[in-house]
Length: 94
Picture 1 (cartoon, one colour):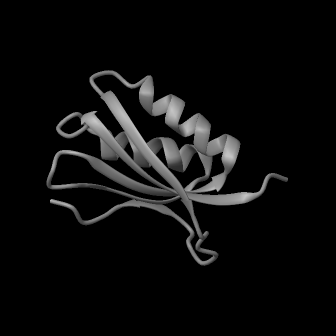
Picture 2: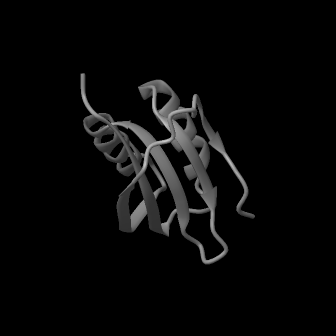
C-alpha cells in the first residue's frame, strides 16, 4: 500500500465562480481522499488533501480536465498527515 501523505495546495487562475470547490469535493470523494477546499479572498482556491501520492496526483489531473476551470498556477507543499480526518469537505473562505 502507498504511503499516506498530505499536501497543502493553492490553485490560481480562473478557479472561482466555476464550481471548482464542488468538483474537487466530488473528485476527492470518489477517489477516497480526505481534506478540505475553500475560496480565498484574492481569487485563489486553497486545499489540503490527504491520501496516497499517486491518487492525489490523479485528483489534480482530473481537476485540470474539468470544463471552465483554467488553472494558471499551483503552489504545493507536503505537510504532516492528519490521522483523524475521515472526509473531504468545503470549508470557510468567502
